[in-house]
Length: 480
Image 1 (cartoon, rainbow, N blue to C red):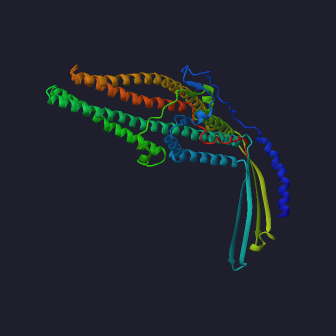
Image 2: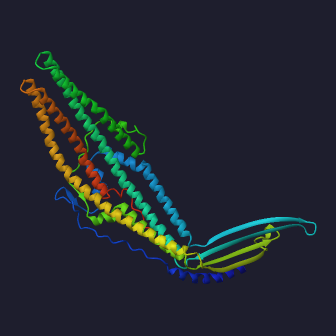
Image 3: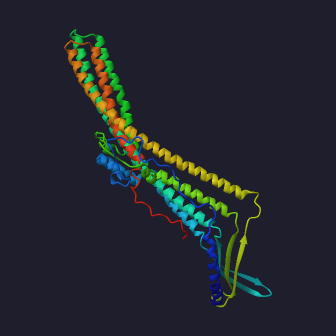
């Protein structure tokens, strides 16, 4: 065994000399695409939006500006228990393992074997044979195919990690939007129930006036019809409320109905701040996780061109083995017959009917697809931010008008009823004023929710919350 080890040692230098061949890697070197980035948003309002760096703590934990402890609790629960997040985390673990598998191709494969047999013959009698050995093989990465595969798996790992962060951004937005929907439904129910009580009082008044000969049966029936119409709207609002609660339960990893205790009490819709934090387009493109994922998948696919190109070139492999044979098991490692074998093999494709070159062509087409996907993702992100900014500004204008409308409708309803009781107007005036009040207050409740929902959509479009988890360590493209 010492003799064999010395011979193998003398060949280590020879094996090392081949490593310089791995310095070249066929296929294109990746360059990040350069897309034109506007300096500012087209819909950037003059007031109400402050431009800040995307790393600003306010943008990273944007939901805290709503100052709602229940929402904070639900978001913490979602981050810990949401099943979609767990799936994304498992995909990161899978991608990390596949990168390690790809990196293992740079190292020799070593195996061992051992066995024994016994034969019984009239000529030689009983005979035992024992053998053991170690064999190894190593494919030298002559033209960088393995390196490109490792580069691709590294980029894919970064893409999957960005997917996880995109899931987080979406989850935070969905939880907050579902919570606002619940509070909006509760607000609409409160308005409807208050108006229902007022309409019941109107029914009593018209009934009394009809009994006194001061009103007609028509007035009574119209009052009852208006009351029943409002009453009929309550089940739909109840259904929307329960659907919102169930949605929140699922988003937080719980069964529907689990949140009844913390959501049963009606609370106001979280109020959006007067000023929100935005960021410049360049920051959004650099930090938004779906853009990052698309860019890393483009890098991964570009590396696959090198993998496909390397198939055109020769493959160089080294192999060797050490074997020992003995008649007695105890002599296997001390006095057995030793044998070694080592060799060098070179193989290369000669004829494949053009399949290898067509594979390169197909891989290049996949790169074009990945590039188009990346560009589409960037444009969609810009569109989402522009739309969110526009909706934020316009809803503020709409909300201010609805506040005035609801206030005037409330006063008109009170005046109409007072004048009706005084005999100055007919009951149709009361009904008209009543319908306007119901419509205005319901629209105001919806707008209250939309104000906050638009803030949530804006922060989601900006990629807010992507850094809830610590950023991953940057994976090196270098072979291990």
